[in-house]
Amino acid sequence: CYDAFVSYSERDAYWVENLMVQELENFNPPFKLCLHKRDFIPGKWIIDNIIDSIEKSHKTVFVLSENFVKSEWCKYELDFSHFRLFDENNDAAILVLLEPIEKKAIPRRSCKLRKIMNTKTYLEWPMDEARQEGFWVNLRAAIKS
Image (cartoon, rainbow, N blue to C red; front, side):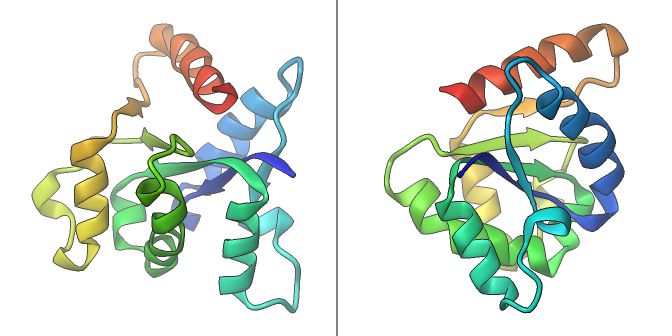
């Protein structure tokens, strides 16, 4: 079991692997994150890996960016997680906005993402280094809740 499955674009892997993983997995007590690159089972259908990872995780963290919006795999992860995370009225989804995203930049086919961004609160990654520690405190609290 995992504390959180992390859904992100491969183009945002540097931020996830070098900042998020370091901050959360090296924390005391450490969080156990599920990352597709590291934790998916080779030879298993990707769709099955996604569903199993979401089901085995207490939360799902969506790292939202322009890259996420353009990624087909991220769209699949959002679609497959949609019922469990958003329709069951629980707080299993955590949205992290890595960069500002114009609502009109979100493709029409991503109407679920539009809906989620309009109905759920999200954490914004601050470019100002002085505010980044507060971001990590809030993210850890959201995963624990």
